[in-house]
Length: 165
Length: 274
Image (cartoon, rainbow over all chains, first blue to last red; front, top):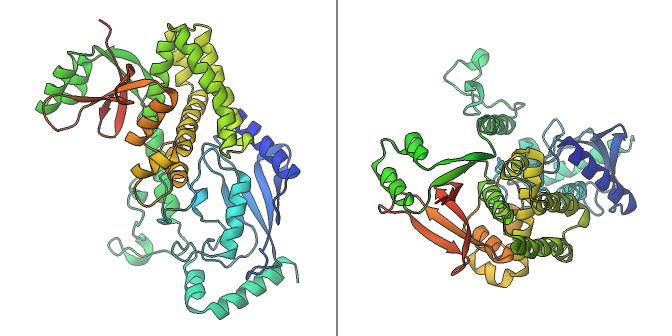
């Protein structure tokens, strides 16, 4: 099973290198282990996170792509859909049947024809448009809903920090 | 097991056993999900993906001893079928059961195998045309064609059983059947959109209910698979209504090649060996 996963991950890496989507870089941390990837995600233009560069880790299970990877930001990121420890909580990262957040019916789910690229693009749109209906960080969701100004300030500080400023 | 059974186990040290407190840093979702994974693992370790075939009477021993309705239905079923093969209850049983039973018939039907091989070969291009990225479907298609190749080389039923009990191969085969169903639904979306509930588009339905592994099959999956592949499927329904098993053939009016037994939430394979 891990052999099929490796083959698929190599194909995806090649695909991402040949046709990188805008604002996303991703690949294995070490080419000896294709099951641990690092990704850099640029904050999408004209959003609160514009200008930031956010590093994340993707960990793939041995039965990938039957099951989805896990994704965790390794930098600070105060956001309704990111747990305080960095783990990303969006529908496409959940195995079928796991629906702790009761996502809306149109939300993309994981299936074997999804891909790393699809996940990262979903993460970019999550940064652009937080979903406070399914909050992983309750504080962040509350601020986003009730005190947008303060949320914006925290986001700006996060962007600066991500650039090492 | 108790620890995570409800996901909200009270914190013993801080607040006593009867006043559950929400711990901010604790990830209850993960605990619930890992419990679910654990249950799935237990099911999978106790059950073959595809069991050897066994006489139908053994079902009476297992399930229906004290149940009058099921006993009656089994007696009725016994007038049409003699054997059963159990399929693992992992949400893929319809696809896996269908796949095995159909390939088993192909072992002795060269003309049908040739017809099916052509459909399967062409299906990859059709999926790419529908917008599935090639690199996401390639491995599944390859495995699917390999398994078909075993049947073409006239492998034995035992070898086919082994192939379908090899989780890696078996699951990839199931994924590709799911993709063919998804492809058919999307190609004929104008028709199928009428049968989809919850205000979802056909594409959303496919993404959520067809393509993910472990998602159970409904009538729409069966209609789409049997229509797309032009393979007749007979389903015997063993539920609580009436005293005989009702059956239905998909697609309507087709000649059944594969026979399945449906008990609420699950499909197994039926045979008439007389």
